[in-house]
Image (cartoon, rainbow over all chains, first blue to last red; front, top):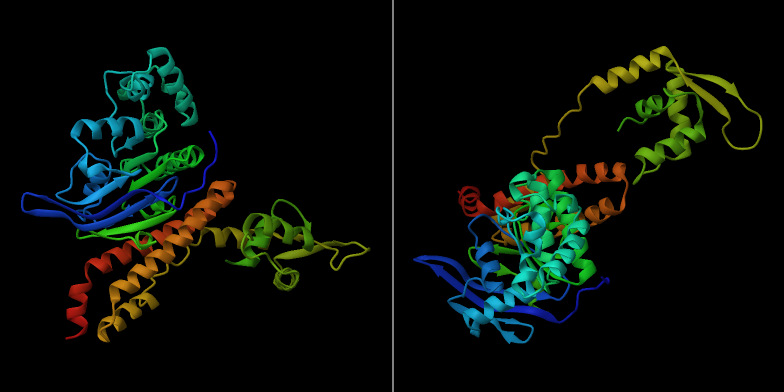
Length: 232
Length: 174
């Protein structure tokens, strides 16, 4: 792992994103840019379109209008299969509730994305344990998600997001279900690890103390984004 | 902060010279605002006059202050009473920011821009405090957390106000 400074060149750039669910507009002409290695907080009131923006940027949801360029490729033009492959190799995800597979042990959960990418079980779990130690949850390796605390579960989820060495981590309210102390621990470990590996982070949060771990913030309001960096 | 009570409290663990008191204060409480020597001596003179400390001994030698102070029973009682008295919560009514928002609405300027600018400034300071907290010891963390929670409260007010700007504009222009 080596330290890395944010690059000046956008790794991910979205222009004019629009998305409507039924008759409800979730995004209306949102612009966004993300440089390699930077941590950007996406803030805004509930229902402003923060999570929809994250889902579009991550290729989970296809926007109705607008384009997303990731590392020179037009994400919005890729097939579902190609976007799924990209999510497995280049992106990591952390959600408000860890979304760990309850039937698997914690180490199997962390190793899961590596296994899906074709890595052998032994090697995948060895790497998983390294990340779990980094996130201070290696003692939960043999336990199932139901046997650990919420804070430990989120740290296991962060280890899983980092295990494939992604270039971008998408975190949607990663501390939303945690108390202050556990939330701070998750944010410290997540941002330290991302800075060490050079991974960029898109961090959706409504908590200012969580956003304070970012390099800069954007504010989503009524589906549009105020992104001062976008003009750079 | 009551410097007098804090210095008295530091004396409860044993007598100290004025210089030792300043050093102990700065280490624990003076991260941003270390005490001036003059503040220590003027405070100790007042405490001495009020019978809350006594001079236990005076040492000859170099340095500006060689008096060794000890807390009295009255001083211990005073510290206990101070610790037991709750601090007055600050209501922060009629803040400058509220005034700016109302004035902007009254004069047809962009109140949302004022709130956005203030949010950025608050977050800039919160980032600084977060960095300091990450690099600091537990005392640093507690001090920074206190400031961070207050700044966060301001930001929650900013968000709520931003969401109510249309209504506020109607009311102030009535």
